[in-house]
Length: 116
Length: 112
Image 1: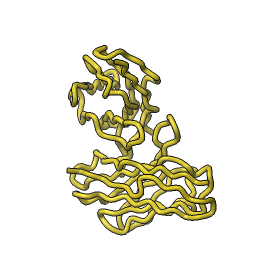
Image 2: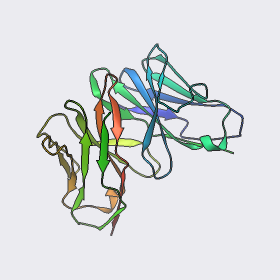
Image 3: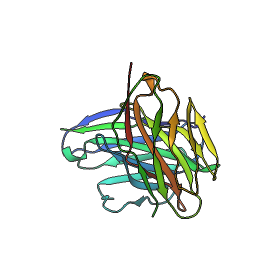
């Protein structure tokens, strides 16, 4: 149980285009999902917290107009990187919190974004 | 806010050696504590957890004990294997949205 999927696992896009990453909780309802960014050989940086049916809460320094987050259902959150630039290339990981076990997060396998 | 300090690597061991990765935390209240493992190119997997003082989390031969008096949650394994090579993250959870606070991660490499 408690499986979180991400799609796509890898994506390459050109500068100036937008890319959407999906995060799904497969066997539980996730009222809260989190989006992280991880640079090579670094820890995870929390970008935003997404609550179902409401606007995401962004961490300081994260551009909300560049990283659009939508959490329209209890099993799906999306992260859209708009007008991507090479410096947006990174490993993006989502996690989901089970309503029944609030202190535990389940992580997706990550999405490797490369902007050329 | 919460913070987590863990031993910075990289740590390189031979197979069957004993492993300790130190982790200390600062937090308000009584946070739950976690160790996550990340294999190359993958997301994070929960390795073990402890939710209250003196709890011992264990999984796959790894153990960690929640020490409130020393605010520590050190990860140990008696005999590491090559397949244990990965990055290990210590973390706490807190706040109304249960945000995770991560340590910087420790890269473990186990040689045959």
